[in-house]
Image (cartoon, rainbow, N blue to C red):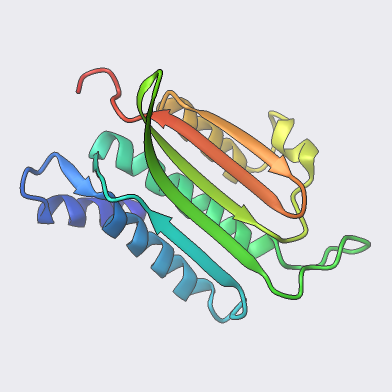
Length: 168
């Protein structure tokens, strides 16, 4: 779905090299929300994306990251594990995609956070962890970026990456 959406956005783009980030990520977030709506209809979803264009080389891995992290939030963050913490009364998932200019040049960022029960911190550190976490880590490496995980009152993943990947 993420890759098909990127190709669709690319065909709509006037230069065929960049896609509209806000539309692309908005489509991904909407599709995931719809597909998980019956499983968890009461979660609030706070989405924002800066107005920017991304190369396909950056958009595809970012779309897969958002897809994986958001899906995991909606599947796992608000279910009660045996002897685990109670999920919050008002579930919230936040997705923010942004752009900033710093010492390293133009940087992109992805934040996906929830106020759910939180992931086991050990799963985030182990190499033989879940396929989803391994996928996110691999895509972050592909982007030449970094990921910061925080498990406190839910789970938060912040990914930072350069917007120019070598040949642009």
